Image (cartoon, rainbow, N blue to C red; front, side, top):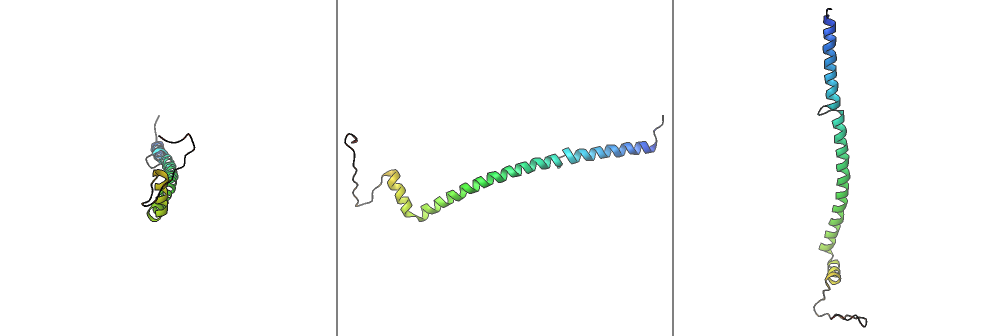
Length: 100
């Protein structure tokens, strides 16, 4: 049984075709790798949207704190119980709830 040149050429062509297909589908830059990168990109976009919303909210709060002395004063009074100089604070308690 003799193998002709045509059979050898066809075998080499088939081998090259299989190697190319492997690279196209499973290679470092293949279709499957591209899909993985696309999924990662979408996840990062979603994460970025969440972080951007948080940043906007924090930036607005910082702006309010820097510009709005009333807000700062309100927070100090509510959270820390601060009183201005010259002010008198009156606390009213129900009977039986007087702190000791």
